[in-house]
Structures are given as structure tokens and as C-alpha cells.
Length: 203
Image (cartoon, rainbow, N blue to C red; front, side, top):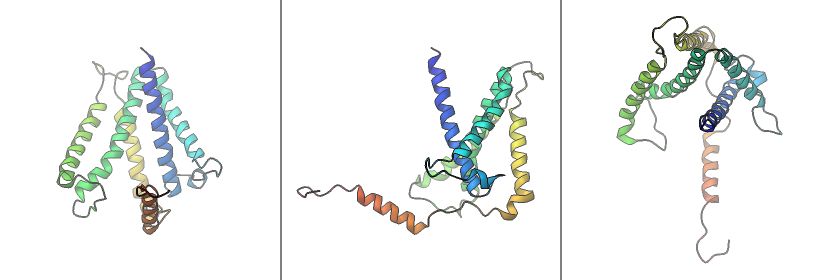
């Protein structure tokens, strides 16, 4: 019976590592993290951001070390991962709600349901984030306190402070690797290559 949870944790960890390393690579490519010139290099043979993968592994390992001897620390680490994921979803959704009139829809959208769904999503994320920072044992003391709010607060304070003091003066946003015309041309070529030839004609 233990194989199921272990397998779920393994695949969840693999997914988290994949998304984290790709996100770190994007920040490194755009100059958004210290040492970006080193971490944004991609080997030609693997075509994968190996350096940012190892960076994500190292930081995750360091973050998980306190949980080896404490169930409270383990709960805090898992809560931090969950809240961080939800916050990353909440930011673009909240911006869509706040800047409703300036929002430009993409090819896929929910039509008139977009705005209500966005509001419901923000409310749900706020609720689940609060739920994950609540203590999980009673009575609450220094050994049972959920320290998730401390860790999340430190990360948010660092990010906001770094933005206010430095990044806002030089960070220009994501670097476009292809133009919009090239993207449209690639999508047209991909669509034409998947078209089924008319019946009766040789391929």
C-alpha cells in the first residue's frame, strides 16, 4: 500500500523539478537572477538547461533538509511548495482582474465567464493559502507552529525588495526569441503539414 503515495510523491517531485528548472532558466535568460550569465547556458548536445536543473535540485535539497528530523518541518515544506504554486497562478489571474480593460484575450478564452471565473479563482487561492499556513496541531507552541508563513514572507519580502531597490530600474521583461511573424509562420507550417491529402490522390 505504500507504493502508491511514494509513486505519487516521485512524479510530483519530477514535475516540480521540471517546471522549476525551466522557470529558473527563463529568469536567467532574461537576467532576472544572480549569476544569470552562468545559468542561462544550454549545452548543444543535450539542448536542456542542465545548470538550472542542478540549481533547482540543490535549492530543493537544502529546503528539505530540516524536514528530515521533524514532521512539523516536513508539513511546512510541503505547504510552502503548495502555496508557492498557487501564488504563481494567482498573480496573472489577479492582474487580469485588476487590469480588465487593458487585458487582451488570446485565441482560447471562456467568453463572458472569464471574469467571474478569474474572481472565483483568486478567492479560492486566497482561502487555500490561508488554510495551508494554519497550525496542524493543538495546542500551538514552538514545536507545533506552522512556519510556512515565515518562509513565504521571507521570499515575498526578498522579491519585492529586490524589485523596488534594483530590478525595476533595469529589468525589461521577457526576452523574445522569435518575432510574432515567425510564430505565425511556424503555426501555419505546422497546420499545413498535418492536413490530410484529398481522397484519390497519391501522397
